Amino acid sequence: MKLSARVNQVSPSLTLAIAAKAKAMQAKGIDVCSFSAGEPDFPTPKHICEAAKTALDEGKTRYGAAVGELRLREAIANKLKKDNNLNYEADNIIVTNGGKFSLFNLMQVLIEPGDEVIIPAPYWLSYPEMVKLAGGTPVIVETSAENDYKITIEQLEQAITPNTKLFVFNSPSNPTGTVYAPNEVKALAKIIVERDILVVSDEIYEKILYDDAQHLSIGSIDEEIFKRTITSSGFAKSHSMTGWRVGYAAAPMEILKAMAKIQGHSTSNVCTFAQYGAIAALESSQECVQEMVQAFAQRRSYMHAAVNTISGLSCPKPYGAFYLFVDISKTGKKSLDFCNQLLETKQMAAIPGVAFGMDDCIRFSYATDMDTIKEGIKRLTEFVDS
Ligand code: GLU
Image 1: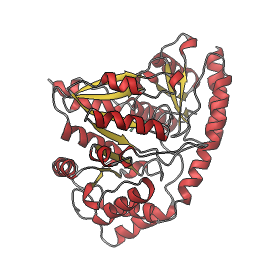
Image 2 (image 1 turned 120 degrees about the vertical axis):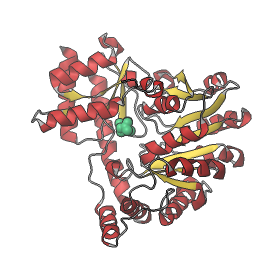
Image 3 (image 1 turned 90 degrees about the horizontal axis):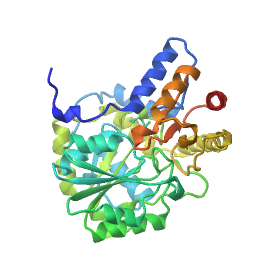
Image 4 (image 1 turned 180 degrees about the horizontal axis):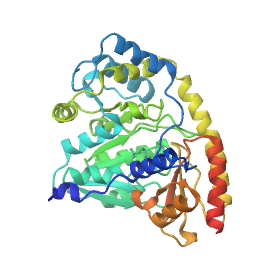
């Protein structure tokens, strides 16, 4: 069968594939330590589940507006004003099938053949594929561990051409855990405005911050950058709602209306009663988020210190999200081999850095319990020593 050239040029999602493989091995009774997909191990907080159950009982089971329930869009607009100093109205918000579909939809709306999209590497593996599926060209800008995996002003300036449409900005970052300081975000915003390009700010990890790291939403800096910003986020990571598939984008009206058209012909509304769970997530106490972040903080300290004691491995300290991005170059192995052998011989799952645009590294998600982390460190040490 001849499949479309469009689909033939994209790779499968390795995060999902490896997580599925680890789960299938576990289902067969194999004792796998999984550090694969970035998925909090906590159950969704009870009050969120209760709100969705009540919505079900009240018959919130029918089609809704393709852009999302008005009450949820209002709650998101309030959240963005209060937490992020972003002045969006409910009309500027679209509720999407996870943060992932807000990004996919946006690429469909903005990008066409000939358009370039600047993506700092290491990047979340779906960004370039979404650009390609929209017919655009991902322009990958490689960052370095020495610069905490942050794109520099010079690098951004040099990457911009007359064909540049969009810059993909992700802080806190998946896969590195890097967090741009507010003055660094401001410096990037200045270039974006001067060169008159658009920026999509993927803020899905904004609540997961450590030590004194601060999150600044790039769109909040001034009116000029606000006009050029699309803010993307969701509930999966902050409220442990990965399977619910509730995310959103906030954008200028013209972009929002175009995204609504795409959604009207693709997913329609996000599951109606799930949206009521998301309303509860925003309108109730955020203590549950803080409790999860505290647990991630402990795991991050332990795992960062432990990995750096293993000879041949090194990684910078992450200040956000729940990933360690580990340099394996001294082991002499490339990332795919390393991860395959680690899974086969030690039943430990990690994601090869090649998926994120950096083949000398691998990613561990530490959104898993301490016992798994301790056992994983033992297996990883044995693996590297052998
Ligand atoms: N975003 C998470 C990760 O990077 C979940 C899997 C995916 O959607 O890629 O592991």
